[in-house]
Image 1 (cartoon, rainbow, N blue to C red):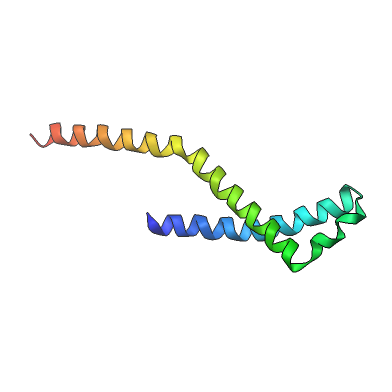
Image 2 (tube, helix red, strand yellow):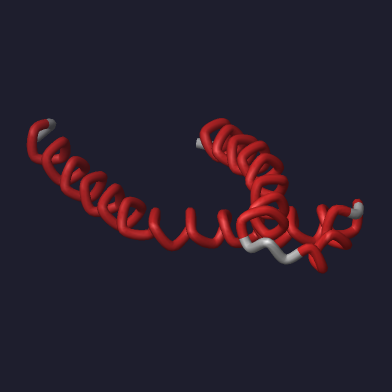
Length: 87
C-alpha cells in the first residue's frame, strides 16, 4: 500500500512540475499580460509549484475518499463471507 502511495506522490510531483511551468506560460502568453513577467523568476516558479502540488494532493484525497470507504465495505463483507465459509 505504501508503494502505491509513493508512486502516486511521485507522479503528482512530476505532474506539478510540468503544470507549474505551463501555468506560468499560460499566464504570460494567453492572457497577454506582460506585467506577469516577474513570475518567471525562481521564486515565482517555486510558489506556483507549491500551490499546484498542494492543490493536486488535496484533490486526490477528496476524490479517493469514496474509494477508500468502498474498499473498507468490501473488505468487511469479504471477511464475513470467509468467516462463514470456514465454519
